[in-house]
Image 1 (cartoon, rainbow, N blue to C red):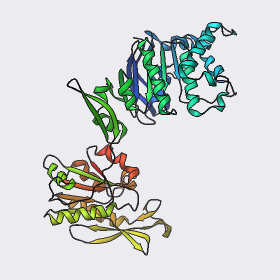
Image 2: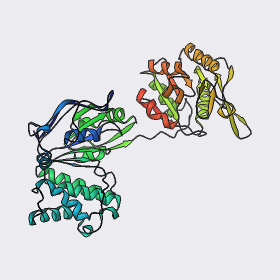
Image 3: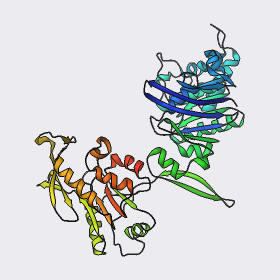
Image 4: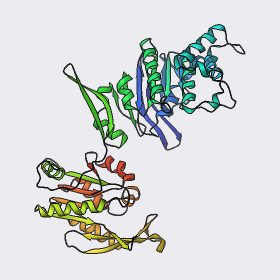
Length: 444
């Protein structure tokens, strides 16, 4: 085993832990991908593995020796870190930047030998940078700068390379070139840990995958076992779809795609095979949630209104609240709330420009008494057939205020079918709470 992390944790500030009890192992010739959202701790993990940061807890071993026991020079001969981007203080040439990868192998105040120059030329040729070798690093494109850093890592000639999003700034051709080089070097015995936002690259090139979420390891294992719709949706807070291909009688994952919101009309419940017909059939097995999303003015409330009409015409009971806008001419000046059981309606919000209030958002000031009334109506609803909640927004998801009874009903599954309006910016938080929800775009 070349590299091992044993239960490492790291915090930049007290009480602000970035990595929690992370363990992993890397063997010779292995490529390990680390996948996760921005801010989940991928770069911090690579810095700990490379010896740049000392974990607050746990240990990192390099060749079965504590990495802290190596000098910086000895460590650099065994493990290299290729960052996402680097801004040098001087306008070094591309060749000079790549030659810096030979620094751990040079004696104090020593000059590069013929062997070092040959290694640098080999790295430049592998990455396709020979024609740019005399250009200032600061004058090549961002993607070319990333290729220079990768060439510098290859010139370092160490058995382990840690690569932080190596293809982030590259076009499709150069992405393919770099990953094919990584694959070929892996076959020659080099080992890689690659942080990435590309699960499709992990499917194609990884021997193992570690999913990181909020600094915790969600799962680690073979790509075919780890890169599933359930796990990826949980880690990225977005619904994903894995495309499979059948090879020799076995099903093999080939691609990962984000599952986009369906653009469907709230069509007839009676039509066999229609969207609503399928949803209402599935409620027999378990409660169904429809998340109606979109930007302001995209027709989310209208979509719910049409669905209510279809449900009523099909003999289904409808409960919950609807929150249509109040308009003066073409200007939206307020929001009202309608109890769908009694038909009673109240003014829920007014424009914030008319004055501040106890409960408000950047645009609206909400009446706390009307919110209490709406919450009471949601608490009293039985959840038979169809529950409408229009809408759950920043108050509920970000400030723990507003229609909290709606959140409670959904979290506890106290409904058969629920149609919930959620704006696009809050969709990840909604899917984190209700990952099996069906997402539709609110337009008719």
